[in-house]
Amino acid sequence: MARMATTRRVMISTAAAWLFGFLIFFPILWMGLASFKTELEAFAIPPSFLFFHWTTENYATVQERSDYLHHAMNSIIIAGGSTLIALLIAIPAAWSMAFSPTKRTKDILLWMLSTKMMPPVGVLVPIYLIYKSFGLLDSRIGLVFILCLGNLPIVIWMLFTYFKEIPRDILEAARMDGATIGRELVYVLTPMAIPGLASTLLLNLILAWNEAFWTLNLSTSSAAPLTTFIASYSSPEGLFWAKLSAASTLAIAPILVLGWFSQKQLVRGLTFGAVK
Amino acid sequence: MGQITLQGVQKSFGPVHIIKGADLDIADGSFVVFVGPSGCGKTTLLRLIAGLGDVSGGKILIDGKNVVDTPPAKRGLSMVFQSYALYPHMSVRGNIGFGLKMAGLPKEEINRKVEAAAATLNLTSYLDRKPRELSGGQRQRVAIGRAIVREPKAFLFDEPLSNLDAALRVQMRIEVTRLQKQLGTTAIYVTHDQVEAMTMADKIVVLNGGKIEQYGSPLELYERPANLFVAGFIGSPKMNFVTGENALQRGAATIGVRPEHLKIERDGASGWQGTIAVAEHLGSDTFLYVDAGALGMLTARYIGELSLHAGDRVSLMPDPARIHRFDESGNALRG
Image (cartoon, rainbow over all chains, first blue to last red; front, side, top):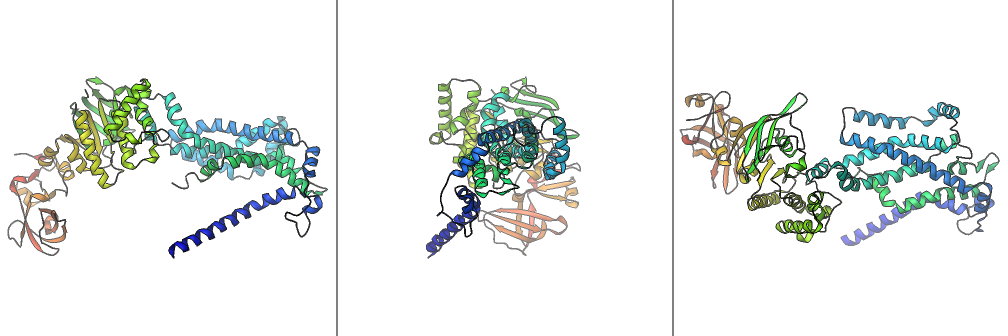
């Protein structure tokens, strides 16, 4: 009896998990489907789920009207560049705060995080004007810079928590074992920090890839990443659902693939410290 | 060789003096236990010897050579940490051999030594596992393996058994003691558990508030405690202390009698009278907690079973030869 009850419970919770997963995934699925419909079918009521006239013409149009590869390249440079620079700054910062904290370390961390509480729109005008005077508008460097600064507090926080997790005893054991600082770094610290570095890198890459506020406001064409590319399909002449869907699908495809292959790292990164 | 001498070793963090001048002579091959309540400075003192902290004053001599400016690895000591501090990404083999690898030994020699150490500790079949795949006791043995493989002048143990459950702790206690005797290497062992100290040590250092209260063999400490602190800290249950008239009669400010040196008499007329508050019957021992009025609570121990219960009146007769006398400042009076 007890066994049957358990089996039933497992079945119910499995079904519930699938249903919930499907609900969350549905918008992405719908977007993917809509991208293969004609503009008319895309907002037809009642909507057709699978039985419609499948077409790839939206993708062709999108590619013809705006250069996907150009925007994708911008996205890669901006997201990748800002992530790498943020890591370069954050690793030593988090390192020193985790391993030689001072009285003010906690305050500094909180202060850095507090900058994320401010709505970015509050500083849009000054930053826009500064960018204008320095000729950074619609430049990749400008976007790399602003996204790097925007995500830096989160990167530092994540790395700080990872480094904090590395027990001091292990570093001391390595010192007792005769490891010099350099060898301690190579043989002990880096291998232990790699999972943390990897999930920080991934998460930050996704954040930077999806960032829409600054990229939309500070770029128009030559530095415009995929977010701008999508936005260009919601025009004053009306929404082109099918084309918008095709553009969006193209825009999220790379990051979706990346996320799929790094699920394990990502989950660890997101739940880190929550369960011990 | 592994003779360790401390001369006036001091350590302060800012205005706080953690170690207030420690002098100690540890003979080669002996097993010395640092014991004391938490915050007494025992771990700090061990870390100073290891080189993981800098002394604020004094000398640490290893085989006659002052090592205060020598980095930890060059002191020829190895340490077993409370948390084991194993390298999580390395196999047992990698963990045990890491020190040898850092010393630049050839691969075959490392393997030979690691396998020999693993055999001593019954770890041979676990050599290719990662620390997370081992039980607590096995991890502890790996940590010990990492220490012995380098053939150090001395082992430093920082509360190595405190993360193990009670049964395993007793077993590992015996294993560590046996191993140390077998290797004949000097060992310094930090613990807050006085039973561990009494059972493992050749000599015990009792620390309190950054000061060495007494240094001697376990039985010396038990039989001739230098002061009230040592008298109260060593021995379980704790020594009974009595002040006032009873003490003055014997020319002391305080007298102390261990629970096992009180003769228990039912309804006796002589000795210290009291009522049993709690009686603990362990079969092998009986512990009585007696409310003796003005004398306070007294603990008495009887070897074997004694059918006395809460509420019974008893009298407790101290063994005159086993009364410890202390002066006003708490130091033992002899003679």
